[in-house]
Amino acid sequence: MPEHKLSLPVMFSYGFGQTSEAVKNAGFNTFLLFYYNQVLQVSAGKTAVVLAIALVFDAVTDPVAGGLSDKARTRWGRRHPFILISAFPLAVTFFLLFHPPTGLGEWGQLGWLLIFAVLVRASMTFYHIPHLALGAEMVSNYNQRSTLYAFNTFCGFMAGAMFVPLSYLFFFPTTEEFNPALLNRAAYTPWALFGGFLMIVAILVCVFGTRSEIPRMRELSAAPPREKFGARRLITEVWAAFRNRSFRAIFFGMMLGTFILAVEGVFNPFMGFHFWGMTTEQLAGLAAGQIVGLILSVFAVPVCTRLFDKKPTLIVSALLTIANVNIPIILALFEVSWFPERGSNTLLAILIFNAGVTVFLGPIIFATLNSMFADITDEHELEVGERREGIIFAARAFAVKATSSLGLIFGGFLLDYIQFPRGAALGEVADDTVWQLGFIAGPATSVFTFCGMVLYLGYRIDRRRHAEITGQLATMRAQEPVVRDPEGARK
Image (cartoon, helix red, strand yellow):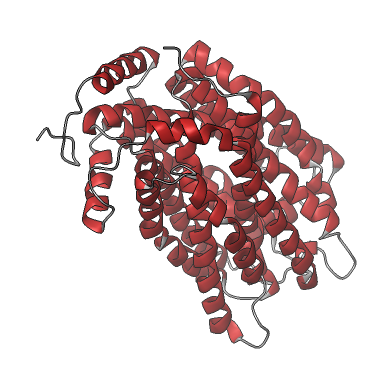
């Protein structure tokens, strides 16, 4: 029987759903800490700690969302109800996150931040985990998985690449009163409404664009789960996932690799304005390079994984990204004579090219990682006798969020440590502080990315191994089901 192949509209609809997470991530990574620290003038360290505490709740909600969706049996399938229900709460809590009542004081604002950061993350979790699991459930073909997750990653990166510059141009124009323009508190109201609207639209496109696959997936998961959802069962299933060697390799590699992204998320607006000396209008120009890089990457992902397989593609792309991120920062730090001065159009052209290369490599890395996690779900089914895409992708999501937590704390405290001034206008920050900012955002943290890349060497599922897995699964499904305990041992 030939493997089921997804149509182009279904793959696009699935990928377009990633826009919702991209908007939320842009809000958190680019705007949120800057808003609370520079606009509301709350301590960066305290803000980072609160955001990290909010991430702790994901340790509970991630596996819960994964476990519930694994065991759900509805006429809309296992994943779609969770994805749909998350849309409206996500948009509302995102808006309120940027609108604390006046007169709260610093601790009151931190309390507001904690409550709504938790609610936004919880709403996103009940979309994001079932969404990732849906991709592994919809397609089992080794190569088409890379293509599907390439669409997903492309849409996410494209949304992020467009949302930030569009935000700068239409909601945060530079004025004589506000430079950097993100200091304009009134602009956050229409901007947050716009972000919430985009997230709802993206989720609806995903749900209704992939609904044609529901009958087939419902048939595949028609058998009731062996055990009901419960805390003990959940813990056992998560532990069983960590018994898989390939899962451990990319889980811990991703944790270290994404640490740098979290720190950069804290530092990015500060770097753009104060290290590179750019305005919001100039920074919006980075989108030109990013869009070109994204268009090229969506074609490069399936080609690279076919020619070089998934692990080599991941490792080489990670190495190139480390080099690309650090080269311009190091040249600026050491004031190389031929390197253009801050705020110049020549520097902007270099940053546009650099952004294009980074965004070309980023989707290759994340699409390949997601495809590798999807392949692990097949090997894990062979080990335990049950499909657990939700648990696998819940653990994957938590790996990213856990390192984001550490990165937020680290980045926030470092801003306080270097005594970065609050509410600082362009050109008012001491040169020594700006130098420390660039050193931290560049070479100082890239060591974590490199260590994460080394861990990827432990991944052992290649094209041949996956063919063996799918063959054994087909044989197992054709026979009488083998009853196993949650850790995979035969009963």
